[in-house]
Length: 434
Image (cartoon, rainbow, N blue to C red; front, top):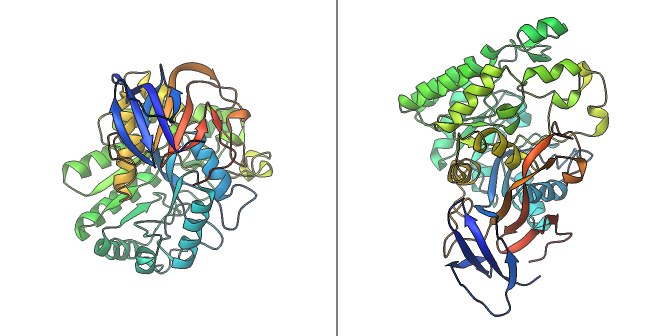
């Protein structure tokens, strides 16, 4: 396709319609009546233009678990959802706990070409929680890692957590904590409460999340370092983050699309697509995290895209793996849960799904406003369309979506990554070339 694009009549972040001229990977014009000989014109009448989405929490599975996803297939899924940057979690095999592994992931993302794949490094060796991984080596590698997490496991030892927070200060890094007390969640199958008691399933209590967050915000305050809380899911957790921010503690937090929309009531059917960690919570928790995102207590939306092969979900509930795919559906779910309910405007969506995640991850070239001189990474989105979400919408290797056959608003029509179209007229481009 042409190296130059002229997007006609897009409403930038929900505002007035304008043309956007893209040349050589950069936005070179924003206004009305723009012209450029030879540019491929894109009719964006009725479409929103948003900065390319940034996901701070993606599981791409490669290396080691390519039956679930690869960096290539996950990158295509991301592009289909309007993403231009994803942060790849380190629970791979081998674990991304060395400079060599994170540089390999970076190179695979560059070769795929659909999005920028930014590796996240493990906090501890093998994510075993026993000793710190090579944080400094990963930070100074070509991957320039700034986010570290043992996601999938909690950094449970408070001394290890303190040392990690101290270490990352030297290069302005952040520790992203999977807040789950392992002792309080042994054998847990779903949210602890009335529904778990009725179903006879072992419960995952809210306090198992909240107690770790409370401990870690105090550690972050003591050390003077940055803490990020992954996939926050309870009303109590929102209260703790709100308190910590009022106190001036450098903490940020994310919520997933599924925790903004789905509740524990879905577990009654024992459909393993709804099995996730942290589990789907109560109606009260969903309302609390929506409020927390709306008032800025929660900083960002992150997908926790977690693909699994069919056999990991097509089994009895207790044996099924935790996790849901979410890259292709995230923007549509956020529209339903937050925009259509009046809790967020499209400027806010750009902040929580693009600008703020890039800022937390210290990526200056991602999540930038759509203005002259900025990298041409953006998505064109139709907010008016309403249709069921189906397997045809999934572009990754796994189909464990909780939204299959559910009506969702919106559709990504175009995605541009550094000036190249990765999604065109609603279809993922088969091959992206520089």
